[in-house]
Image 1 (spheres, rainbow, N blue to C red):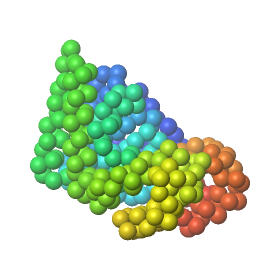
Image 2: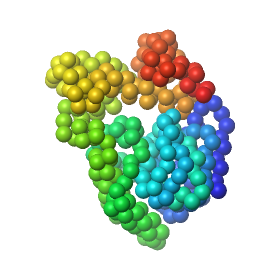
Image 3: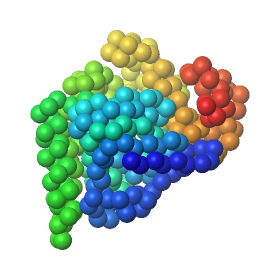
Image 4: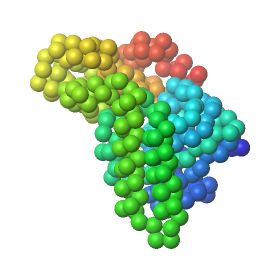
Length: 286
């Protein structure tokens, strides 16, 4: 049984080196760990590397960016650098973890196909039995390659790309908006533009101009296809980042407001409360 208890007001950032002593197999770029039985992380933390977890049998709760996800059998959980998580994993759980340094992750990241925001909003992906078996094979193949005396990084990278492609296919089947983004290039581009510009640009007109359409048409497109307005989509992304900064840094509320492009502390506080029902201070201390 594993317990991790951390102290301090905000979520600490834990590097990959902290996990090397417990690795089942690994090299500089990537670690493979097995999860067996009960584990608890009592205070949320974040990582500066990418994690993908394949659960065979699982029960408990995994909290990612303040959303609690019940654990289930045959699931993949993805955590991008900067996301905050903790978990209460119950006895009998079996899972497999790949921890990947950012430069190596960037080599196979395009195989995830969709905007990272999509995965960050939906980090838990339920798998078909056939997809689970395919992923388990690739996870085991990476473990075996890592254990080899002369492990080949290019082979590991190729297998990681296969994993990303399988996860993307399952995500497409699981989350309706992924299909919408894939079938509508303008919405996919809008989502990527939000990722790049949300701190500086919070008005629909900027994005509509980049997409060479009117703000009104972009709004109609979002409401029809995604069931939310274009403004709400931008605000969701701002709110995700605000939550990460509140839990994951020691920045003051004023500094976070400035980081996210708000003119002043009060404007940011009002925005955050309108989105979450809580003030930034209340969210940070909950």
